Image (cartoon, rainbow, N blue to C red):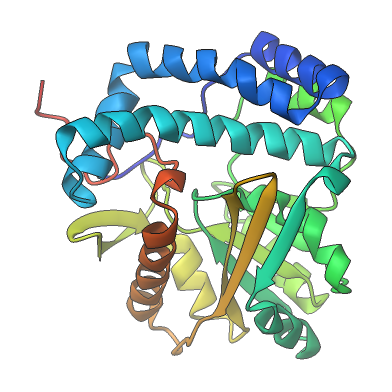
Length: 295
C-alpha cells in the first residue's frame, strides 16, 4: 500500500547551515549549496531514488535517462521549497513574488461563514500559503491536520529562528478527539486543511487511479469532507522561477457521503497540477506499491 512512515529526511546541523546562509548571504546562496546536498541524495538514497524514478519513468512515461536527470532535479527543487519556507517564515516574504489563480473560491468560502475544508497534497509548497493569504484581505485561521511524528529537535530549531506561525496544528489522535477539534474550528468559521496523499500504517484508506495506476489514499480527509456539509477547496502553492509562487484554488463539487467521488475529483485535480509541475511531486516512497518485490 502507498503508506508513508511519517518522517522526513534531514538533520539539525544541515538546517543550521542553511539558515546561516539564508540570513547572512541570502536565499540564492543557500540554493548554491543545495547542489551538493541534492547530489548526495541522488547518489546514496537508493530507496527514495527508486520510488521517484518509478514516478518519472513509469507514471509520466519519460525515458530512463531523462528520468534519472529528473530525479536529481526533483531533489534540488524540493530543497528549494524547504529553503523558501524557512526564509519566508523568518521574515523574508518581501523577497518573493506570488500570484493567485482561483482565489475567488476562497473568498466565497469565507463569505458563507460556515468554515471550510482545504485539501492539498505533498506537491509544491502549501505550508507557505498562509503567508500570502493576508495580502489579499482574507482574514481567517487555518487548522492543519497532521501527525506528530516529525523529529522534535528539528521542529524546535526551526521554531527558534522563524516567526510564530498563524496556522494551528490539530494532531491526529487514536482516541479520535481531533474530530471534536475540527468541528469546533468549523463552528468558529475557520478553515481545516488536510493533505490527501499520504496515510500511515493502520489507518483507513481509499483506492483510486492516479497517473494511470491504482494507489491508496488516506480515507479520513474525504470521509470528513463529504459528511460535514461545508465548502471544500483544493489548494496548492507551486514554485516557479525567480522566487515566485503560484497559488491555485479550485472549489470541489461534493455530494453528501460520496467520499469516493470526492477522491476522484481530487485525483483529477492533482493530475492537472502535475502536468504543469512534474518536478514538484514530493512523495519519495513507494506510492504505487510497485517496488517491494523488486531488487
